[in-house]
Length: 298
Image 1: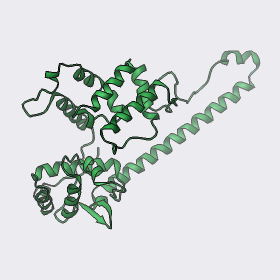
Image 2: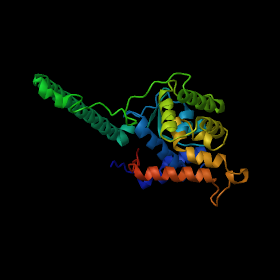
Image 3: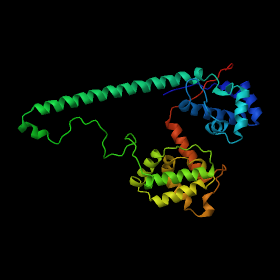
Image 4: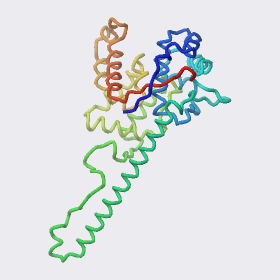
């Protein structure tokens, strides 16, 4: 489990106070958005911390900032949380705080890849030796091994697994049509939303949704349209995987009586918002605890 410290000085650090004042927000709210940005960067930014080709809108989305994204990025630059190297933005001192952790992760991935390669070579070599031994046996002895494949190492094609190679779908196939439909609905709300050009993975997810989850494709298409016209779900359903995961919640809310769809709780959130918040909290509780360290002179 990886740990990165988050000093109590961050709450009253001059950079925090300056940035919060620039944005006219409570410093505790700012700290929350900073941590959202750092958590996102751990999985999406290199050891140098460069936010290559990222627009202020994308940086604001990564930080879950709900205000003006341009103003948010300018404030982080003025406050010293983001460095501007002639138009190339980078997280301040990212290597010192998280770069080493990212390097260790990359090294471990490379070691795992080499271990898998070595294991595969050994398995293939053993299979070849077994086949050679079988060929040398008399015909009468080969009968007991006919039809068998010793030490089979290829994925079991009867098991649906995300590790298997993605299937190829024709444009007029139902899974691909569902993927195209979701893409069109998302872009109809915001043409600048980042969606993949290659929809093979989305189509694969749609295929699993129909075969494994037993979903009706027409119902699924209607739910996609409904979700992208709902002010809450349109911001949270931006992929086929997320749509499949939230399918039951979407269906319950879409078919609920109008007066019960947006019932606001005591803390001002709707039922849908509460369900999504609780799910996010559960996922974070199971993930690594990540804190970001900021020293007084950072």
